[in-house]
Amino acid sequence: MNPFSLSPDRVLEEAVTFNKRLASGFETLSGLGDVEPGSCEKDAVYSEDKLVLYRYRPLREDNRIGVPLLITYALVNRPYVVDLQPDRSLVRAMLESGLDVYLIDWGYPDGADRFLGLDDYINGYLKRCVDHVRAAHELDAINLLGICQGGTFSMCFAALYPERVRNLITMVAPVDFQTRTICSAIGPRTWMWICWWIRWATSPGKCSTGRICP
Image 1: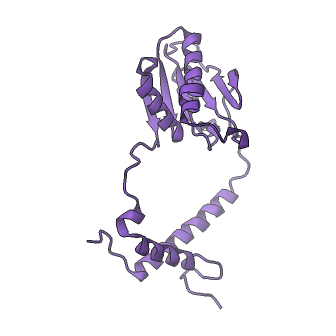
Image 2: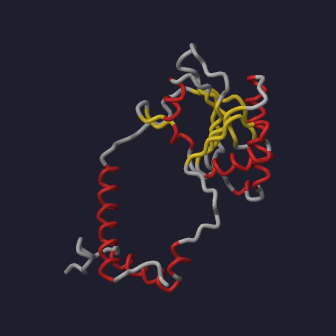
């Protein structure tokens, strides 16, 4: 039995609503102006190939939490997302709470990285960054925060080297890759039909009702 009950009118309504929200989002973004990310000062403490390991400068010296935190972000996204502005900064909040924060910047991949695999990133780059932080603080294990693809890397690392990870935290990290997709749930023919309707409803030359404008 098909778990979805869809009609052309319903699909068109959803597509038009999405189109309006997308236009509203573009309008909002265009009025934001320039944003200078990276409000917290940091120092490069280790580098290898394109990778740079940063340590953020503390904002307070009292009541420092003894176990440092290493943030691992995704390969294709920019890690400054965790430190956008003074009032929108995960890193700043951590520093103000007394944490000692490190961050891995993987750099920009190019053709030279085409032969790198998971083993290189997890058992190579990530392991050496963790070991650098451990050695700098003379600790057997540190705290690891993985975000997005970096969360998947962190989970793999913690499974391989549990003695090096005291606490593992993940955010928006894909874990279960066996979850059924919408396409597999409703069937490829139905999914193609939905995509056709969305493409038609959001194509140029249509008004807010989805009809072709004169």
